[in-house]
Structures are given as structure tokens and as C-alpha cells.
Length: 196
Image (cartoon, rainbow, N blue to C red; front, side, top):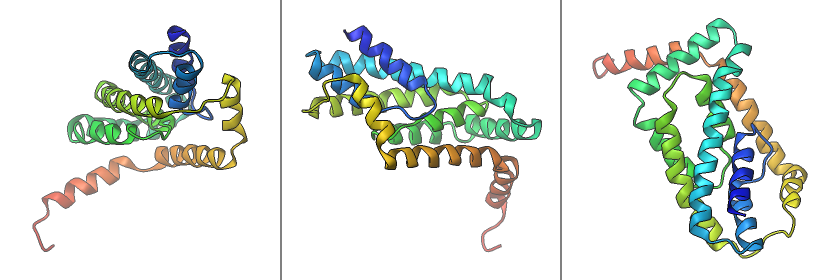
């Protein structure tokens, strides 16, 4: 049953939107099938990280085809900046973000659209999710009796649907930001003398 949990977790983390939180899936398996929390959390974090990496790689390979050449080059500039100047900040931000139960689908799609190195980002996500899944699954006391109810609940909750739509809209806006100009201006502002 652990393997089934890992497969479901991988699949929902591969989806770009409208999936239930991974911790709720893990809590369902832990309570319904009396699975041990630690192996479930460790395997769940690995499966979630693999799913998010696959999502990022799919968006890098397929999603960039839908962008203009200028937008692809613009996002590549952001990826280069992350790999050079943001190589600590990006994984730290992902680590902090991944402690919470908030979905990260669109973050990984955005990371995939850049040319940034995904290894530190996925590594930070794994650490954060490992800790958060252990906490959330350990503290879960109630679970629905059917796995399908978790997916149905996600699609019936207007607030969650609204948040997913806002996140998708933010992803579209992310691709429209002129990252080259923004990063160039940031670099220039750092070299100006104080008081100018």
C-alpha cells in the first residue's frame, strides 16, 4: 500500500493544478491503511519532489514552445540570474515555502520555464516537504473514507478553485515580466554611489 501512496503522490504533483494537498493524500493512506508515518512521509516527499521535477521539466520542454522567442530569452536571463546571483536565495525561498501546505505547482512550472538549475530548488522542496508531511500526517486524526472524496472536495471548494485560478494568472503574468530589464536595473542600482 505504501507503493500505491507514492504513485498517487507522484501523479498529483505532476499535475499543473486542481489537485488536493499531498499531505491530505498521505494522511488518508496513513489512517485508512494504518501505514507508518515516517516511511510514508519520506517516500511521499521523494514522490512529490519527483513529480514536481517532472512538471518543471515538462514545462521547460513543452511550455517554452508556446512562448515567443523574446519571452524565452527573457526567462532564460532570469534562469541565469538565479544560477549565479540567486543560487542561495531561490532554494532558501523554496525551502521556506515548502514548509507550508500551500500547493507549489505554478512555482515549478515557472522554474521550468526558466533555464535555472532545478536540483537545488527540488532539493530544498524535498527537505521542506519531508518535514511538513511528517508533521501534517502525524497530526491528522480524521480522514475521508474514500480517496475520490479528496479530489471531489478540491473541485467543490470555491476558495481553492479561486486560488488556483489566481495562481495560474500569476504564472501568465510571470512570463510577461521583462526580467532582463528588471535585473539590469537592479544591477545598475547596486553600483550607483550612495545618495544618488
